[in-house]
Amino acid sequence: MAELATIARPYAEALFKASASDLTSAAAWVDELAVIASNPQLQQFADSPKVTSTQVFDLIAGVAKSALGDHARNFLRTVIENSRLSALPEIASQFRALKNAQSGSSDAVVYSAFPVTGAELADVAVVLEKRFGRKLNVSVELQPELIGGIRVVVGDEVLDSSVKARLEQMKVALTA
View 1 (cartoon, rainbow, N blue to C red):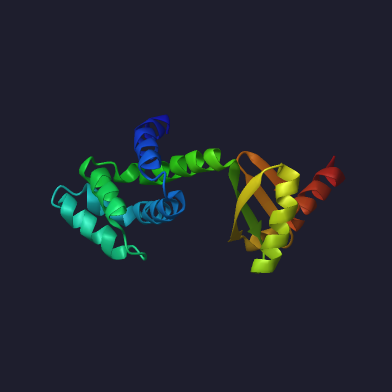
View 2 (view 1 turned 60 degrees about the horizontal axis):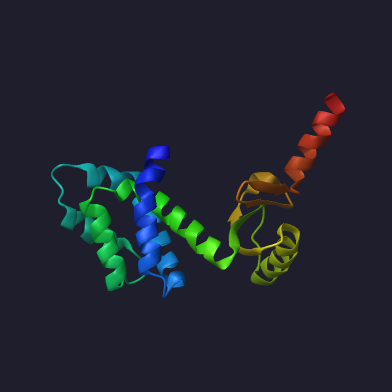
């Protein structure tokens, strides 16, 4: 995937420079477009030689939940016309990394077996920011197979306090 990262880098950097005045809203719409673009059926549709770039653009713009501003529409047109739709998720990832580097923060994903309320997430975020020593943009994903507890992923660091991990540790200790 180094090739995809190489393709995505100039787009992410250009978007970062062009969106310097409003990085937060740009991050929101580029993430939404990345989710849409990662759909395999959309990729197959876009790769069809019978489909024009205008048709692909209209489909994506129609599916987007938020109204795309001129900046977002121009960016999306450029990506589609250059046949880089498959790189859009990587562009969004690199854009987020640039945004985080500027603000001195990191993305954190909290995997939980049960839904987490806003207040609970705020409490967890405070503890995690102290633990990792930087501001975190925390999101939650449900993973019922964890049984209980949470697993936190920040970049390449993992903090696993789930019941599943503890059971695995007990299994290793008992079979050793």
